Length: 349
Image (cartoon, rainbow, N blue to C red):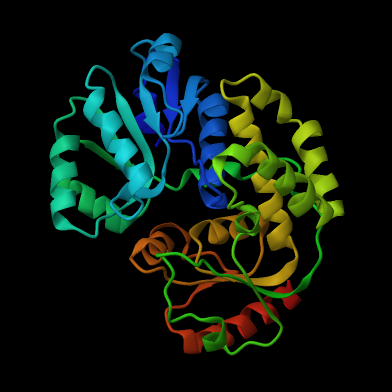
């Protein structure tokens, strides 16, 4: 990764695109890790940021000229999550006049024709670096994106390691949390009932409880309801803690100096809420990749489960298989034994 971004040369400015305009915490952790890496490690000025919803070619040209474009990492390179994936291909096809770097992604296509179409588009770009975050995607990229500069690098959420203040967020040690995704990446074999565990709290990221179904004309009212009722009155101590985190943490001033500061502060608040959610449990079971990563950063014993394609298992085998307080379990019948082992390990630590 450092080798790839070191090729940005003397520009020292860039655009960072494809901000996660949704409530999946994991993509916000990636975004924060990219912000910290670019600004703190390689001293890059991020002079323009946007999501696929609010991207403006005119504004980007005004802010960065012909400087490089960086595209947010994650699991949206392919045709599974079409909105973000289409935005990536649109940017790559339009901007052949500058360097583009796709930050660490997992690649997955459900349709071979879509893969071949995108491969032709990517390979036509004169200066495209494609970073992938696990071995399966790396092999696929070498085969199909052969004219790109392909690099394997960890998920950018790992740049959150050693973030100050994580230990100050309130902890309430209950029993076991099953952080269970409920979308098209969920492996349905791992139903809560199949795990055969008592005292199991079953949740997805708490952020999905805040999604308001109101139509666009009342968006402002929906935001107020979400912030002061769903996130405030339902958990006043956590709400107060998050407000302190957002306004008084040493990183707050960093976000205020960056283009799109409200985006970064939103993601920063999401990080706080995710930590509060996981800190409430002695053991976490999850099929969410960033549930796994955040448990590693927080030192929480956890069981990591497969998703519907190779992403989770390939990531685990590539980077995190040596984590002593994690077990990757592919069979629902083995979850209970792994939970017993990890709980015993946590008692002896």
